[in-house]
Length: 441
Image 1: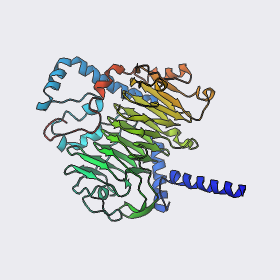
Image 2: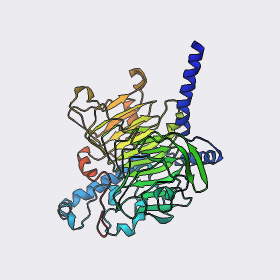
Image 3: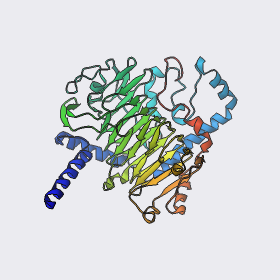
Image 4: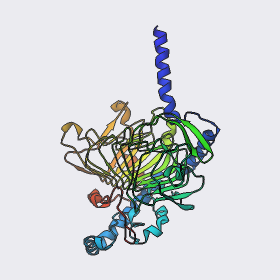
């Protein structure tokens, strides 16, 4: 009987592991095997052996932008007062790259030149045609109707996807995006809500911009078209807002997200060259997961930038929770958490620079950091460093790793991060923007 119970437990454990490893692919056929092979090749090419060069480049842009804002402070204040008359309000280097153009609606693809951090160089659908989503329905996941978002994202060619009007899209099943796509919701109020979320699996070169994503729930799966020439079996989805699996060059920008069943954004299974910027997260428990397994060492190549993001009301933990890779957390505003802000296991490298952390009133939750599945003796060697962070209301960051190891981040390849006191300005317009044609966004 004991042996039978052990076998039963093993079977259940294996059944749980399979969906994680295959990310809800019910039939891992030749199509998905080829897609995986190509994704691994692109991820290996995207990996930066000297990540400090990427963080240096990012900090240079921030310092330059803030220096310009300071130099023109009087002019900036005038522009802010006159913003309703169409003046530019960009306050960080990513936004400054495109938001000041009053003709942004006709120059949408300029956004493709603006990614910073590890996703720098991500151009999404820049080389393709504009695809206009005119229909917010998702009635047929096997033969999607032309004009729907699902029909757009499964096309083979690069596409820049925009929306003809504001809409709420309730996805019947997870939205499986193919490579070289931009989902650009500027100029419309687009909500992905009350159904499945967005799946970015074994692909490259994706930009997701300007969406409201909330109230995402698990869906049962079934036959779903994931390409114009392939239909595959999917198992039950987790209920993530955005799930990035085995993919590279993914830029998620100006997203407002809340209240999803699982994570708001999960990045797992060897994904790399990722930037999450200018987002606003609220009302959620486990916000972001970077790396899903302590046994999956391929996540060592995972490199992610989180920048200019506001972690706001009603958040509990995982902002993010990290395994293995290199995570640059820079110039974000942590105004709310209930348990902790940044956590991890499996010795990730976490470089926290120029963030503002405002601890909750609870005396037991003042610590920014949390380590899992390791003794203090084990995690003492993990490189978790805080540089230039602003700690308020008793917040503290428990650093670890050799203090002298941080010198490589202040060598010729690094620029001293800008003061965290500027964070409220840098993230001032976090979340989905309200953009009008013929005016700066």
